[in-house]
Image (cartoon, rainbow, N blue to C red; front, side, top):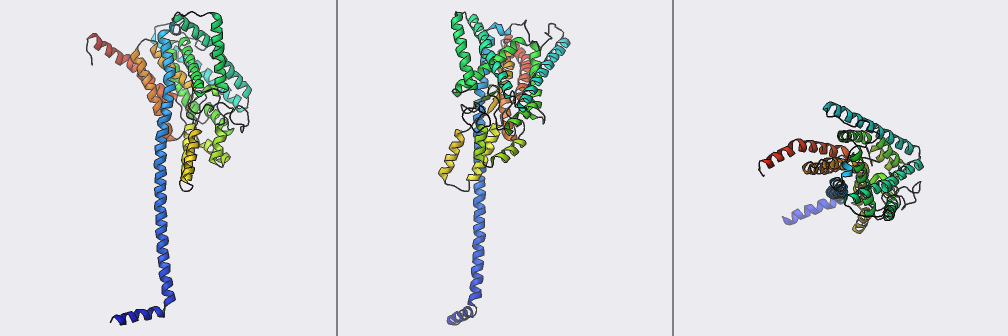
Length: 456
């Protein structure tokens, strides 16, 4: 039986050896191809999943990193203003006002105070809008010498004249003697080092310190020369203006940023605080730009992302808002995370592991950090400094916490929506709400508990 069966099988194989062998080989090859395709698909899915997980981890890491890097300078600027207001009476004395505030609120009628504050705020908003429009027009038509001269003279006044007034008041308040020759030498050195740090090159921490001091000085000037209720009205109105200027299709700050992106240029260094590299804003490290003196960020980014011109322009058209010359977050953080994500996706399927490490190290070394307009520092400090001028530490701390919470939420929304956002509205809104609620509810409640000797 066994031999018969074997013979039958042998006979069949000898009858059609070629067709059967080809059919079996074809079926086995198809099965192998299917299995290989499935294996590649599973590997690709795992690889894509790893890239997504890594991208989410890096977004969380860099988001928290930028939050911390912004909290420190904002806190320092507000602390300088609060310390000055608390120790020097000069900046809380009234009697002299800005020319843009013709109504001085010298009445006790609530209705009169309201319309005078709104009128002053409207006049100031009109001045800000006109000046911003002139800045955009001058930049649009390449009047760069006019703009740089304007900003240069403003920095000279802040670093020399207003710094002299500030130092003189500090010396008076603490009864410190200093002769005029020494004072002139101190102011000269302070001002010249500041101009070099802002407009040329200096250690990053020195440049940041001067920008923080300039913002605090401007906040103190506004606190002194603005009427009381006008200050709160200006804060509310400027938040609405910030929304329009950054997010509206024809917003002046959005036009300014889009024009700078088209030209591969950077916003002016005296208007932007950067937490990144030393020369992220100072144009002296790259000669590939059209003009000597423009920052090196954009050309270097284009060189590494490949197919630079068209891709960068298309992404520039899709981005909303941007690096606000006065108020608002820059979209540098969003752009760099997008670049980082594309590079990781491109490197995930090819190349040795050492090459990936080199690319990541290079990306980290050229990370320019987040940028925030100095106007945001100024108005944050105005809110907290004005709250501290009334001598109530509860409202001061409430406003301080509210501003930091708003700043954190703005960065969260920046990461979620992947578009540039203005930095004033959320923080200023929270600050105003916290101020009035604390002043009208929390402080009277705490005073009542204290008078009854009830401690919680």
